[in-house]
Length: 156
Image (cartoon, rainbow, N blue to C red; front, side):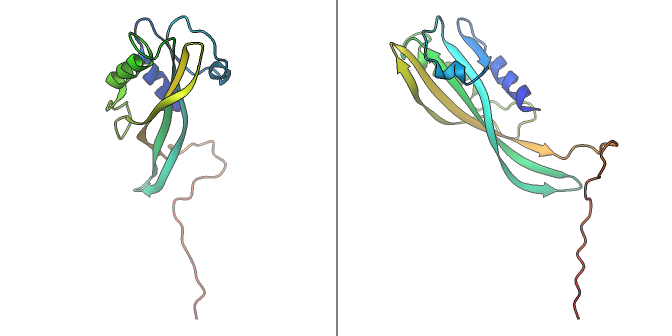
């Protein structure tokens, strides 16, 4: 799956009544602190860590996707406040294994980002592992992939 497909899958899992859940449209949506009519969740995959390449007839590389959900609400407590939303997100995501993922979702950090005039913003970071696999050969490639490496040495 692509990053966009993973973001869309997470948005789908987080859909709930009374809450706006979207992929982060632009960083400005987070920077501008403004009153929120209803709680908002913004989902973003903001990078990944790549493991050592593995080769078994094809090249595959384990990738840990680093994701973040920005949570905005008028209140920190109570029905659909920050902590209520955190609980609902945990129920929907923690331990869930997405399609093509190798590991289930694991949370790494949850904390305060900003707050002004009783409008709060917190962030939840989480990750899961997938595999990046070598693409099938493409006939249009000008240069093919190296399939075999040989080393020649000039030893006496």
